[in-house]
Length: 456
Ligand code: GLN
Image (cartoon, rainbow, N blue to C red; front, side):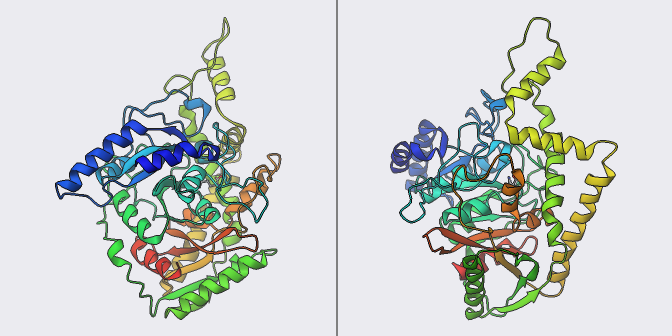
C-alpha cells in the first residue's frame, strides 16, 4: 500500500487518481496486516486497489467525473465497493473516468483526461487510456494499484483494458449489484474488475458478485469459485467466429491478431466454427438510442436540490431558472447531448419510431446470441476494439459518431446482457497493446475466464 501511494504521487501526470484516500488506505492496510497475522485473511486481504469515481464511497467524493456532483460525499457505500472492502482489499482512491461514464477516451471528465502510460514507438504524443474507465486502465497499466473497478455500459471496461494491455471482464447483467453505482443506462450498466491478468480478474470478480436485495435486478444465484475454474483445459470447446464482426477497413493487424487468437484456442484443443450474428449491424444505432434514453431519465435527478452543486441564481430566479442554470453549467457537452437525444427518442411523437423500435431490435440482437449458444457454441471470439489506442484530442468533438464507432464490437454484449472479457493478446507495429474479446453464455463467467486464460 505504501509503495502504491508513492507511485500514485509520482504519477500525477497520468491524472488517473482524482481523489486520493491515503488515510483510509493505511487504516485498511493495517487492518489487513492484523487479519493476516491472526490467520483469517479473506481473498483480497491487503491488496491495494482503485475505485472508479462512479461508485459511491462513504464520506469520500464521488462525482462521476461531473461538475454537477461537486461536493457530493455519499452517506453510503456501494454494494460492490463494500464487498471489496469486506474481502480485505485496500482502497487507494477514486479513479478518473468520462463524465457519467459517457465516452470512450476519458476526455469528457471534469478533471481533464487520464493519460495512458503507453506511447506509440518513439513518438511522445499522449494517448488515451480509453474510456469510460480510463483512470482505472491507466492506473493498473502503470502499476499504481494491483487492480481497479470499472463499469461497462457499452464497452467501458473492455475497451480501456484493450487499449492499455490489461484484462477486463464485464459479467452477465445482474451478477454484480448496481446499488450505489451512479446510474448511466440501468438496463446495460454492470461493474467488473480491471486487472493485470485473468487470474486476478477471477479472484476480484468473485469478491464483487452476489445477490443484493437492494438491487432488484441482481441475480439470486450462487457465486462460483472462479479461480478454481482456471484449469486451462478448453478441449472440445466450440468457439464461434462471427462473420459480421469482420468490418470493412479493419486494420490488417487486428485481422491478424484475431486469426492468431483463434489459432491459439485451436492449438489448445478448441474447435473453431464460423458463425453468423445477423443483427450486429444494428447494434450501435440501437445502443445509441437506448443508452441516451435511459440516461436522460436517470440524470433527471440532478436538479440542484438533492445532490452536489447548485448554480448561482439571480434576483427573481425561480425554480425553473435554478434547474436550467444548474444543469447548463453542471453537465458537460457530451452529457447534454445524450440528455437531448434521450428525451427526443422518448418524446410522445417519436417514442414508437425510435425507442420502441430500438427495444425490438435489441431483442433480435439478443436472439442472435441465444441461437448460436443453442447450437452448441460455448464462446465467441472477436476483436475488442477496431484499432489500438488513439491520440488524445485526435477525435473531433464536433463528430461524436466517430467516437461512438469505437464501441462497435462491445455494445452487442451489453444489449444482450452477456458476459464479455477483453484479454491483451499482442502489440501493433508501433508497440501498442491490442486485445481480443471473448463473449460467453449468461452466468458462465467461470468458463469464459477459463477460455480467456488459454488465450493469455
Ligand atoms: N463508449 C460508450 C458510451 O459512451 C460506452 C460507455 C460505457 O460503457 N460506460 O456510451
